[in-house]
Structures are given as C-alpha cells and as structure tokens.
Amino acid sequence: MARPKTPLLTRQGIRTAALGLVDRDGLEGLSMRKLAQELEVQAASLYSHYRTKDELLADIANEIMAGVDVSGFEQGDWRCGLTVWARSYRRALAAHPNLVPVIAVGPGRREEALRRADAVHGGLVAAGWPPRHATMIGASTKYLVVGGAINSFARGFDDDVQVYRDRYPNLFQAHKLAEHAAEIDEDSFELALEAFLAGLEATFEKVRVRPDDHV
Image (tube, rainbow, N blue to C red; front, side, top):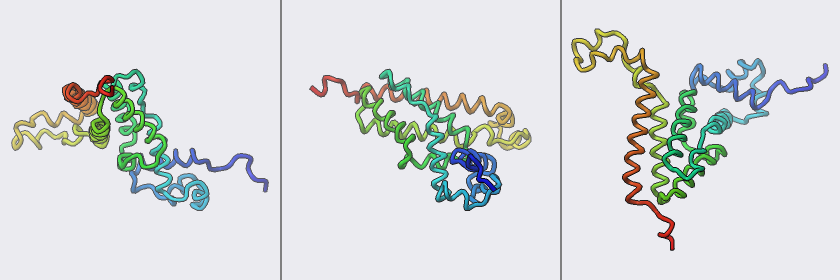
C-alpha cells in the first residue's frame, strides 16, 4: 500500500487535540495514551513528534502565550502597556483555565513567553521605572491575572437562597451571584486592575528614573 502523501499527524494537530482534552477533562485527563485514542493512532506515533507529555504541554503553553498582546508598551505609556497586557493575558488564560497551572509556573525557556516578559520589562524600564520595580510590577500583574483567570468568585456560591437566609444575613443576595458570574468576574477584575494602576501612579512619582538622572 502506498504511503499517504501527507502525514496523518502534525505537531499542530497533536497540540489542538491535546488542548481539547485538557479543556474537557483537565490536566489529569491528558496522557499520551488517551491522546492517541482521541487521534485514532498508536501512542508510539506521538513520540516521533513529542518525546514527553511535558514537552507537549510546554509547546501548547507557548502557543497560547503567542496570542497575548504586549503592543501597548510600544508608545512609551506604561499604563496603557500594563492595561493591554493584563486584559489580553487574562483572556488567554480564562479561555483555557485547566491549563493555567502549566502556564503560571513561569516562562522557563518558552520563546513566546520570554518575548512577552522581555517586552513588558523593557517597556516599563523605558518609561522610567527602575529595573527592580519593573520586575516586581511584572510579577504583581501576573498574580492579579492568574488569580482572575483560574476560577470564578461568583460561581463559588450556591444558588439556593435557603443556604444563606438564616445563618448568613449579610449574604442574603449571594444566591444570585452565579447567574451574573461572567459580568461580576469581569467587573471585579477591572476594579482590581484600576486600583492596581492607581497605586502604581503614586509609586511612580517617587521612584521614576528621568533621562537627565543618567547625565
């Protein structure tokens, strides 16, 4: 039998199928054996493309980070840069919450994550932030984003009013939160981001490095 002109498996196809499994079944639901079943191939076929599951997950994380927007720093406005980055970063993570533990461990050697870390740090320093503060701002923004993407505050409440009515009088409206979870979570993130930026404004005036400081 003649070999097919195009390969049955591609790295992109493997990543797409693996991400679908993670989205559906969680990280614990992904194994090379299950992925092979999903793709209707033998597990050995996968190893010619990815040696390990960790290598595959790193590649998926790198691909997701490629969609995170750091262009807001290009005009020299650190506030715009942080806002665009934080919103885009949260959207990317919120689209695949089961993968957040993989992405959140750090850039490591992932090219796309390192490119974005470099752009963020460089944008902040170019705008006048001391390097140490730029590092801490990058870390703090990540904490805010990951916390906002990994789960839903509003969906953590039961929709049965009786759970709260008698014992928790200050939560008498909590049963309605899940119904409006998307709106509440989005607005809560925006409030936290706004407060974060406002706090940084005050700090910036104290620590700002001006061009003539280097003369």
